Length: 252
Image 1 (spheres, one colour):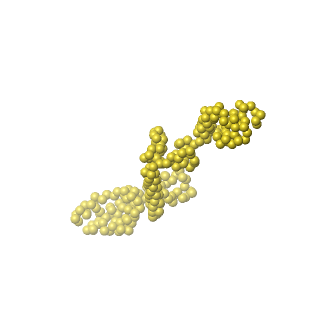
Image 2: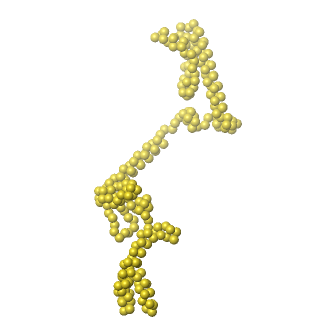
Image 3: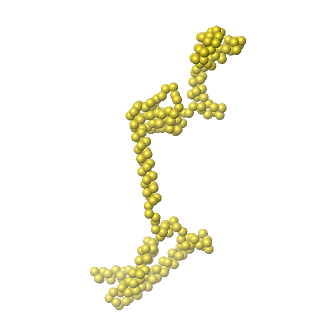
C-alpha cells in the first residue's frame, strides 16, 4: 500500500474519519505525514463531508426511492405527532411551535427536539377526547343492535321477511308484484263487500238501535283485525258512514 502514489493514498484517506486517520498515523511515519496533510483535510471538509450529508438526507435507492423518510411519511406513521400537525404541514407553518407541537422520534438523531409540557398536555388531552368520542359512538351502536327484536308482522309489512308467495317455487319471480296486487285487490273487495252489506241491512232496520245487530257483532268479532292488519287495509275500506254519524248525533 505504501508503494502507491501519494495522490492515490490521499484520495483513499479522504474517505476515513478523524479517529481512523489518527490510528493510521501511528502505523508509519509516511502515513503520519499523509494524515496531517492540509490538502487532505480541506478536501474532507469541502467535498467528502457535504457529499455524505447529501446522501444521508436525499439519497435514493437504485429503484429511485428515498432512503430517508419525508416529513409527511413521518406524520402518517405517527412518529411526528402534534396538535393539528397535518394542517400546519399543508399550510407551510412552522411545525415545532412551542404552543402546539410535540415530537417523538423512534430513531436516533444528532439533536432531539422536545415539546414544552403545555403542548404535551394539550396533545394528550386531545387524544383522550377522541377516544371518549369513539367509545360513545361504539356504545350507542351496540345498544341499538341489542334492542328487543321487532315483531314478525312488522318485518313482513316492511318486506324484511318474505311472504308466502315469495317462498313458493311454483310462482315466477317476475309475477310476484302482480300476484301481490291481485291478492290485495281480492282482500280489499271482500272486506268492502262485507262492511257494505252489514251497513246497508243495519240502516234499513226498524230497530231503535240499528247498528247493534249484525254489523256491531261483526265489528266486535272481526273488525279489530282491520286495525291490527295494517294501516293500508283500514284506509282502503271507505263505506258510507253518513247515516251512522246522524244516528250518533241524535243520541247526543
